Image 1 (tube, rainbow, N blue to C red):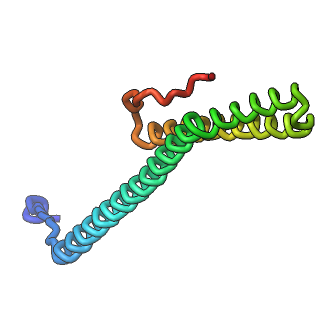
Image 2: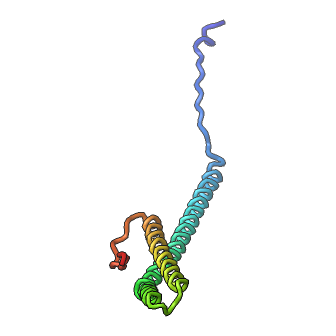
Image 3: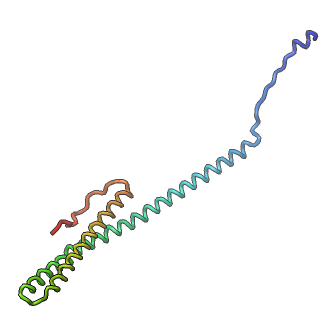
Length: 147
């Protein structure tokens, strides 16, 4: 080899031209926008579900509260009076034993229903607290004490 070939050197430079980058970036941006829209729709659906469930629970709570009030103030006192009256009538022989037993069974059934409404009230309250993620402030006294 002669001396001129030994002094030769080569130099190479390379770079990439983003010929299709615009189309790829547009597709990625469109996909990101679609994912964001889907997430917003899912959030709106979840909020609507929670709002609907809270509406149901509040209705259950109010229904239980009102029925407890009716039983406490009207049904149970009347049933107790009926038992006392049947007992007094039984002692003087005005009614038979079955009438007294029926009155007591009716009172027991009403007390059972009253306690069932109390349990429903507590359940609805607990579910509302679970749905909102925190305890609710204390409500007015319900008069749930035993008589």
